[in-house]
Length: 80
Image (cartoon, rainbow, N blue to C red; front, side, top):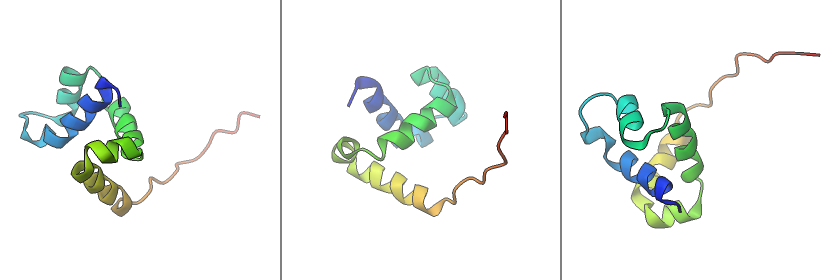
């Protein structure tokens, strides 16, 4: 795992202790847009090395992701 990936995992494990909004903390501490942060986080929880390094956090996030229904698709653009 890269240093940035470790930073994301450490942030996710402690964000609830921070004052203010999570989105603002993501921008301030990690320098990422919240959307990019969540994309990276969801990619990370699918990787075995993240599970080995952060087993409790990854298992919790995986359980939470399974409980959450998939986002409905609004529609697609047909540009043909």
